[in-house]
Each structure stands twice: as structure tokens, then as C-alpha cells.
Length: 608
Image (cartoon, rainbow, N blue to C red; front, side):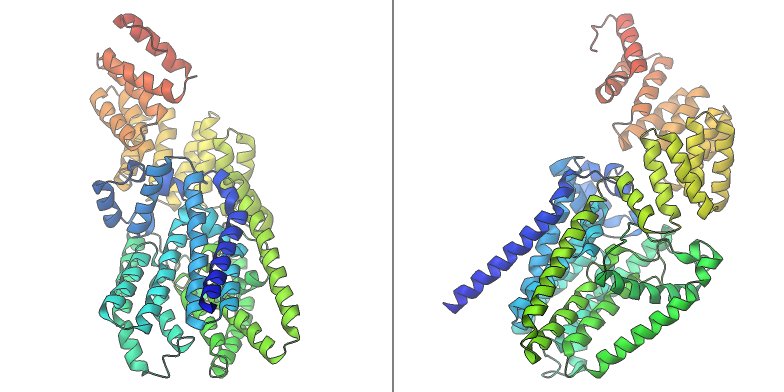
């Protein structure tokens, strides 16, 4: 009878966790993709849009695209496209389902390991509802976070099964779950060390086995983590994602890491002013970098004090030491000592590390209740109030991810000197045709960081749209001096030169862009247009065909390919290209006029 009631309680807690996630995150089904990584991961990625296939599987396991090796994540995006096409609500909802599943699995793992259902449920609830989870769930490109989290939780459950009944088959389940998690996101490299922590508490294996034996048991898992780390380093080095010491000196990296550790704790306790991007002080100005040193000293002292307290009380309060070490260890790979990207910190990095803090706090409250039973009601009400506040704040934060404009407008409100947010907001506004507003934000970005190449080339593109091609060329050249290997900047410079009919130099720049990024559909289309004006019709056709293979809905490429076919004396082959333009853009007057002229000349009945 007791077993049935326990199972019923477990079921009700699980259902409550799922319902809570649905209530907070259900709105993501109505969200759009955002410009932050979503193009490269989904809607401008021809491999993903080819769906699940053997070619896609081969690409997923061999590519370092987006500076990572995470084939399982790529396969999940391909599966999304098979199911939902380019409807953004589909992958958003899948992220929500994975997050709800992770919360339930965390509850089950902790409950089975500790035998304490109530505290385990509370930890899982904070994991499910805390606003620092929002970036990982509401951002399609962070599928790797929630997916790797799923395999993290499965690894915990598989490890518990192995501990209770050791055997090769069960160990292989642990190994497989970890391997799949690492192939979703290399963040799981710290998981073997977390399993060693769990051996201390709550599994209490250190009392029954030697430390050497427990470490030896983890060696295959550590080997797996090392392989994943090596692949990640190779991927990031080949794609130039790892910053150099010239960009951010080692001392400033350490200083920022110390401040970031404490900032994550601060945002855990007071989760406001959350943003999609936090500028790294060392990349803003020398003054901002210098201002980092004082807080770094204070942060370092705080971390030392808490670490010393955890070590001192490890026998009496092992949960505190384990939770604190979980936080420090799992966050270390992304804390910025090895700088990847230009952010000071990121909410998504806290997806798994903060579970350790929740464990330390919740089990600390449990001990306090055991010592002072009268505090039970107060602590319980405090916990419920905190969860309610987290749910409200998370619901509000999820809404900021509705689209690119809402995302970066919010970031500008809650952060300072955020050149990255200005630039991304400007790009989104320009895509909506709001050129004057876009110019304000590009200039705002450059007022903060005058050498920001993305803002320079973005403002150059804006000038091109306004017909100021010489000014655009100058801005693109400045950007190219800063980022000489950028395919985007080279293509943009080529486009500005093309508009001024400097065709030889334009072709040279776009060809260089394709040398860096052969699957760059826009560059293929631009090169085709250049070749067309040079009278190289066969070469133009080849480039435009490649552009349409990469992006079948590319209107400009279809229109230009139709024009090329006419010049090649193949008007009947031009018709399908103008028809394709009109299927995508029924109001395209140029395509409609040319199609009707061709069909009249060919004696065909009009189709539009």
C-alpha cells in the first residue's frame, strides 16, 4: 500500500513539474526564430533543411560547422525540419518538452539517490522554473543545452542503476548515455567528476570503496570526455572561435571568470536584468577592463571563503560540499579561461551547474527544519513564494525571446555598453525596412566599440540600400581590415563594388568570400550577377544554380538565372525560374512582366 502511495506521489510531482513548464514556456510555440545563431543552425542551413538522410548523418558526424562537433544536436534539428518545416513554433515546443522531461528526470534521479522525495521535488522545481533556464529553452539554437541535459539526467539514472547492481551491461548504459550527451554538447565533459561527487553524497560509496577504485571506475568516462574536449578544441580553432591572448590577456580572463562565478550566484538569488548577451569588459575599453580588477579580488575572496567552508563541513554536511563543487566544476569549462566568443558570461551556461546550488540550499533548509521544526512553515512558504516569483519572472523573460527585435531591445534596457545588442537590433530593424532606426543603433554600437566589424559592415549595407555606395565601400573596407578572413565582410564589399560597376574587384572579393565559405548562397548569387554583367553567362548560370541548391527560395538568384537563360538563347528554360519567383513573391512585378513576355513569345498560355 505504501509503495502504491509513493508511486502516486512521484507521479503527481512529475505531472506538476510538466504543468509548470507548460504554463511558463507554452508561449514559445508562437515565437519566431531569432537572428542569433538560428540562421546557421536552422533556417539558412541547407543541410538541416534537407531533413534526415544518410548524407545528412554523414555531414552531422563530420562537420565543425558553428565551431562545434555535436552530431546529435544536428540530427535533432534535421528531425525538427522533417516534422515542422520552417515553422518556428515546432522546434521551440520541442525545447520545452525536453526541458520538462529534464526536470522530471532530475526529480527521479535525486529522489532515488537520496530517498528524499520532498527536497528532490523542490530542487527539480527550481531547475524547471528559474529564469536562468529561459535562454536554454526559448532559443532554438540552444537545443544542444536541453538535449545534452536530457542525456545528463539519463546518465545519472543509468549510473544509479549500475551502483545498485554493478555489471558491464549497466556500465555500458552509463557510457552510452554520456557519449550521446557529449555529442549533443561538450558541456558534459565534467559529468564523470560529478559522478565522483555523487559517490561521496548521497551514494556514500567513499565509505565502502577506496578512492583509487572509484577513480579507476570513471577512467573510461574521463577518456570519453577528453576525446570530446579535443574534438571541440579542434573545431573551435579551425573556425577561429577561440579568442587569443592578444584579444583578452590571461589576467583579465581570470578576473572576469571570478566575477562571472559570483555573478551567476547573484543572478540565482536575484534573477533580474537577464540578457541574451553580456559584453566582456576587456573588449569594450581599457577603462572597463581596469574596472574589472577590484570586483575580481572581492569575488575571489568570496569563492575561497565558501570553498573553505564547504571543505571544513564536508563530514557533517556533505551535500553542501557536493553541491558547491558541482557548481564550480561544471561551470569551469565555460567560465572564460579558454575564451570562446566575446561574451563575459551567458545564462545558458548555468543550465546544469546551478543544480548544485539548488541541492546545497534545499538540503541545507531540510537540515534547518530538522534542527528547528518550528521553521518548517516559514521555510516552506518561502520556498513556494520563491518558486512563484521564479515562474512569473521566467514567463516575462520568455516573452523577450519572441523575436530578434524584442530580444535585443530588452538587452539594451538591462545592460550597459552593449554594442552587440545594438548591432543585432539594427540588423533586425533594417530587415524590416526601418532604415533610420537601424542607423541609430549601428552608430550606437560604433560609439561604444569603434572597431566592431559587424556594425561597420552592417552600416555599410544600410548605406548601399540608400544608394550611398562609396560610403558603403569605405565602411566595408574598414571592417575587412579588422576581420580579413570574414566571408560576410568580403561579400558585402563585393556587393558595394558591384553597385559601382567595379566588376573585376567585386568578383575578386566575392570569390575570396567563397574560398572561406563555399556554401554561402548570397555570395554565389552575387558572383552570378557579376559574371552576368561581364557577359560570362555560363559561369553566371553555374553560380546561380549553386545558390539555388543552397537556398531554393532565393528570389534574387531565381530572377537572375531567368535573365541568364534568356541571354543564353534558352527562353523556355527561363520560364520556370520566373514562375518560381512568383510562387514565392506573387507581387513581384518584374518577374510577372518578364514571364508574360516570354510566354507570349513562346506561344504559351499565361500561368500568372
